[in-house]
Image (cartoon, rainbow, N blue to C red; front, side, top):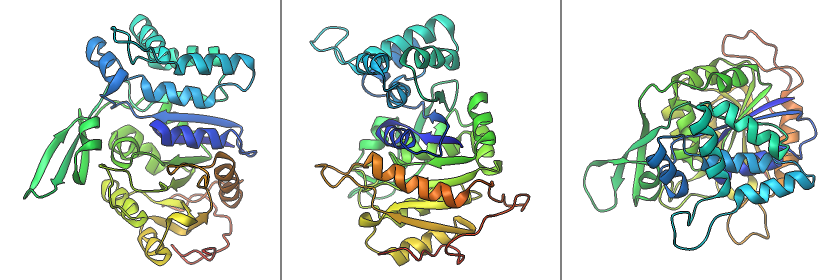
Amino acid sequence: MRVVALGGGHGLHATLTALRRCPPVTDITAVVTVADDGGSSGRLRRELGLLPPGDLRMALAALAGDDERGRFWSGLVQHRFGGTGALAGHAVGNLLLAGLLERDGDPVRALATVGELMGCAGRVLPMARVPLDIEAEVALDGVDGAHLIRGQVAVASTPGRVRRVWLRPADPPACDEAVRAVRDADVVLLGPGSWFTSVLPHLLVPGLRDALLETPAARVVLLNLAPEPGETAGFSPEQHLEVLSGHAPGLRVHAVLADAGSVSLPDRLDAAAADLLVPGGRVWPAAVADARAATPRHDPDALAGALADVFGALTPRRLPTENGTHDSPQHDSPQRGRSSRWP
């Protein structure tokens, strides 16, 4: 099974870690956002004009081999320099990727080189070949009207309600390899992660959005375990879906995977999912949170098991596109947007 995971940061890292433990999956491709402008990535981006390497590095680390070589390289690329000098705060992997990007100018080749060094069980691709900027319309707390916020870090941390986001440039060139991966996939996963700055940007790159809308692959949304301070503070699970539909009106998905313990009003989530799901699609509740974690975090084994269940229902045959050119397998719950498995 060929699975493409779209996202960035810790959310994508969780998905990739789970996919490696999911037996049906034999081919993994991570497609990563390239709009980060903070920390080490932001510094390298501003100084060198390169793609921000941080989220790309994290995806490589998630896919690193389990043998001694993979563990060595994973630990090394994730290591951050201490102190107060020029290197303070930089991750080794960020510098390695920046060097390859500056020398070769080809992000796909640079990522493949590092992936080979790390023995990665899959490949990592940028969603675009140029660094992007995120802008947002935000309703600030206690301030009338909407305000323009620029930059990924600013959007993620501004107190207020994000209404919509867009990219600069508005029509960035999608990475051709990422577009082909989405079109050739058996399953495409969207989320979890920072909703406005890691998940939605994939739908704002025209070439990648078109591939996602047109692919015969099964499309699956993975919801977050909890609202994210600043970016989605106060958001319910159904509001995440409403925002997703608002930014990609033509998107239809075959499944929405949600942590059962994070959904307080299942009927509302089912109702919100109804307009997003294809006929026969459904919401899949599962216990995928790590109960031992101090902060909301996915349990890799539980998420892998839940994904295997979803994949088992969606494959081996590809699901129908909106024009009905592919056969659809039977589902446990044929009623659109309604699940029979809520506890």
